[in-house]
Amino acid sequence: MIDALMENILSMVYIIIGGVLISWSVHFVPVGGAPAAMAQATGIGTGTVQLAAGAGLTGLVSAGFMMNVTDNLPLILASGAVGAMIMISVTMIVGTWVYVYGVGCVPSSAKVKTDPITKYRQDLYVSQGTEGHGLPTVSFVSGVIGGCLGGIGGALVYYALIEVGLAVGLTAGAASTVTGNELVGIAAMFAIGIFFVNAVIPSYNIGGTIEGFHDPKWKKWPKAVVSSFVATILCAVVAVIAISQLGVI
Amino acid sequence: MSAGGSGGGATAAYPPQTIMAIGAIGGLAGIYLGHFMPPAFSFFGGLGAICAIVWGADAVRRVASYGLGTGVPSIGMISLGMGIVAALFGLSVGGVAGPIVSFIAAAIIGAVIGVLANKVIGMGIPIMEQAMVEIAGAGTLAIIGLSVVIAGSFNYADVVQYVVANGYIALIFIIGGMGILHPFNANLGPDEKQDRTLSVAVEKAAIALVITGFASSLHEGLMSAGLNIAVGLVIWAWAFMKYYGFIKRDAHAVVGTGLLPSAEELQ
Image 1: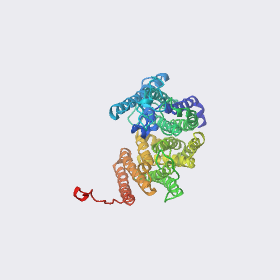
Image 2: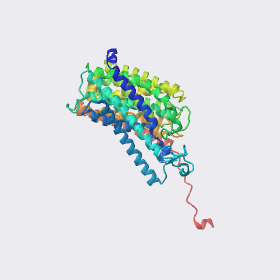
Image 3: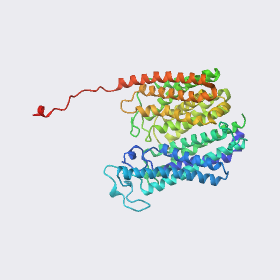
Image 4: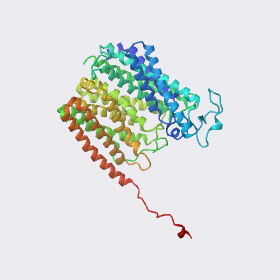
C-alpha cells in the first residue's frame, strides 16, 4: 500500500490540486437557491452542489472524451474547462431569459451600487423587499470563471486517477467489451465522489446565496480551500490505493 | 426546522442509538448474509442497504434540523461522495473484512470532514462530527449493500466487473442518495415526525432494491432478479401503507365553515 502511494506521489498532488480548484470554483458560481427561484435574490435558482456537480461532471465528460484521442495534459484540462464553462453559461443565459422575459425583472443586485464590470447603476432597478434579481453581468462573468476552474479541477482529478491505473498495467482504451472497462468506471466514480465532497464543503462555508467574486461572503474562501485540501488528501490516499489494487486482482 | 433558518435538535421517538444499531449491525449483517449465501439470496444485501438508508436518513434528519444554510440535499450528496470513496477502498484492501474496513475508512473520512466543518468553517452545529461519521458510514453500507444485490458478493473483482465497469454504480449512487436525502427533505416542516420521515426512507430504499433487482438480472439470472424485485415490492407496499397511515394521522382536520352568505341573508 505504501509503495503504491510513493509511486503515485505526482498523481496525488494532481488530485489534491484538483480538489482545491473545485472547492475554490464553487465560490465563483452565482447561487441563489430558493429565493432566486422566486426572483427575490440574484443568481441561479438552485443549490451550490447541484450547479457545481453539473459543471464539474460536464467537465469530466468532455475531459474523458479528449482522453480518447490524446494524453496531452494541457489539452485535456482545456477540454474539461471548456465543457464546464459551456454548461454553466447555458444554464445562466437560459436563467436570465426566464427572469427577464418570464418574470419580467431587470437583472440587478442590491449588494453593490454599480456593476463592477459595466459600471451601470443597479440600485434603481432593485424591487422593494428583495436582494436583487436575475444575473447581472458581473455574476455571469464570475460564473464562467467558476466553471473554468471547476472543469480544470475535475479533469485534473480524472486524469490523475487514470494515470494511476495505467501505471499498474490497466487499459483505458476504447477497444474493450461494453462491460469490461474497469479503469474508466472506477476512475470516474472516484472523481465524482471527490467532486461531491469538494462541492459540499465550500457550500457550507457560503451558507445561502452568493453573487460571485464581488460578494462580501466571497472573502471566506480560504477557510473552505483549507478544509478541502485536508479532505482531498484523505480521498486521494484511498483512491490511489483502491485503483492500484485493481492491478493486483 | 427549515433548510435556511435556525433550528434546534430534533425530537424523536426512537433514540439515535437504536437507529444507529439497526443501521450498522443490520447493514453489515445483511451484506455478509448476501455475500455468503447462494446468489438467489442476494436480496439480503438489499435488506442491509435498507437498514443503512434508514440510519442515514435519521442522521440527516438530526443534523439538518439545525439548519445548514444550503438545503438538505447537499448533506445527502456528501454522504454518497464519502461513501463511494470509502466503499471501493475498503473492498479493495479488506478481502473478506472489506465492508468493515470500508465502514472504518468512512468513519475516519466523516470525522475529519465533520471536524473541518465545525472548527475551520465554523458551522457551530454541536452534533456535526458525530452526524458526519454516521452519514458517511450509512452511505458506505448502502452502496455496498446495493452492490451485493447486483453482484451477488462483495469481492472487489466481482463488484468492479459487475457493478462499476458497466456503470450500475452511478445508478446506486443516485438511488442510494435519494433514500438518504429525500425523506427529511420531503417531510420537513413544523410538524415533521420521525416515524413518518423514516417510513419514507424504508419506502425509498425498497425502490432502490427493486431497481437493483432489475439490474441483477444481467449477472444473476431471472430467478434471482425476480426474487429481489418481489422482496423489494413487498417491502415497498408495506412501507407505503405505513406512510399513508402516518399522513392520515398527522393531517389536520378539515373543518367546514359553511358557504358564503347569500345576498338575501346579508340584508
